[in-house]
Image 1 (spheres, rainbow, N blue to C red):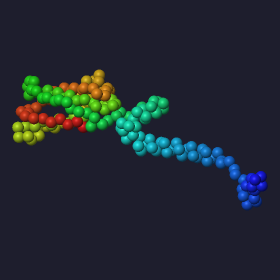
Image 2: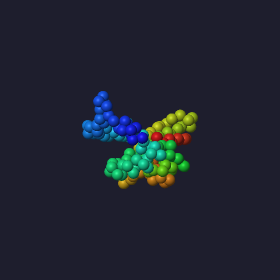
Image 3: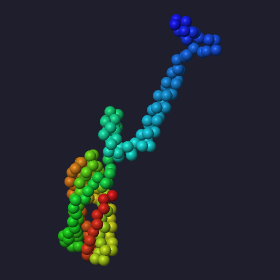
Image 4: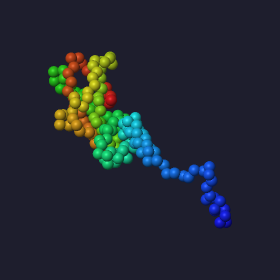
Length: 170
């Protein structure tokens, strides 16, 4: 038994003794790993922040790194629960739209595509309203909290009679 261990431990002239890897390999591997992480962040970072499954983990990591996380945006998480249009005075109309943010995270208010129609169903006017147009100056930087009702009032002018409208969130 002892002879077998001696033979196994014996080194021959053509064998080289095992050497410890150079520090260059350690630093090179570390540098390569850091570059890989930076590339993943650059190419997949935004799409990963928009994924509801990965966002909580990324939020924790970004808090540790003291980096801001991109605002969550998913138009499919908004539901329009009501809208109305009413004439007020001098060919002006008030459009009121209410919707809810069903996402688990706060979101920016969406863009609104308002289409006004005549009696035959043709388009009279079409306009996209952004948050700067329909929000008050004090609320411009605010996000819509999760499961929160949000109501918008817009006053528009129309030289023709409006017989219908449609609203689309963008």
